[in-house]
Image 1 (spheres, rainbow, N blue to C red):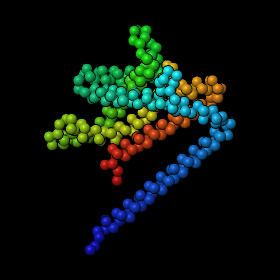
Image 2 (tube, one colour):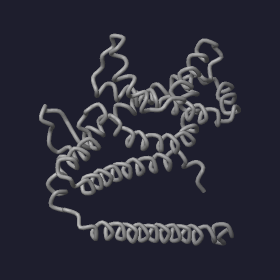
Image 3 (cartoon, one colour):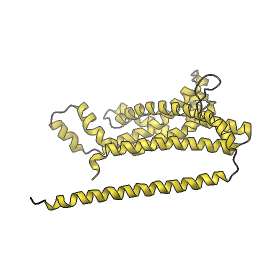
Image 4 (cartoon, rainbow, N blue to C red):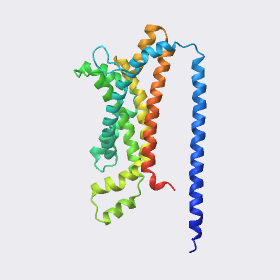
Length: 275
């Protein structure tokens, strides 16, 4: 039985593509290992006090509770980031819907909120919420102030990302779904959202990584998060390089984990667009 010409070449070409992709990954890993070795060698030649890093690392990671019995270090940083991401996504979605609404009131509220929080620095917003609001009788704790500030700031940016993702879906997709008798909810969940996520995830992932690092701003309010502990231990031991470098390494590792999650989501929602 004769094999069609297209089938004769499909298997070898697929195998060749997999081999090329595998070789590319191996070369990338080798490049990372070489650069990481150079970076570690640079720090090894600085005469750092590694015993101090080993002693303080459990506290920086948040493996021990603070004196008042609350989480500290990287654990507190992750808690603040996770809570802020949740409320940020809610605000971003609501604001994006308002930006696309034909209702003048909803559109005006959404655009006003986005303009206000995108047009003022995050540091100023943190200080206003924590230091200025008590002047008018609104007193918030340091943790809640940090979460609120991060959520409001990044929600304004995420709203534009969500809006651009939704608008990137061809209008014909919705019209075809309506012609098939699907409800607006089914269209939003099963048609628009999966296609929009392919556009939303890359910039949203970058924003959440930035949020992880910007959570260090809550150290201004005395919260014992990673940046606060690194500075405190640096002042008490006069070994700033060891403590700040350790904090930077922990932030980097947490960012890499978020990057890996982002990459998996990108592959999942982009399957239909890959050859």
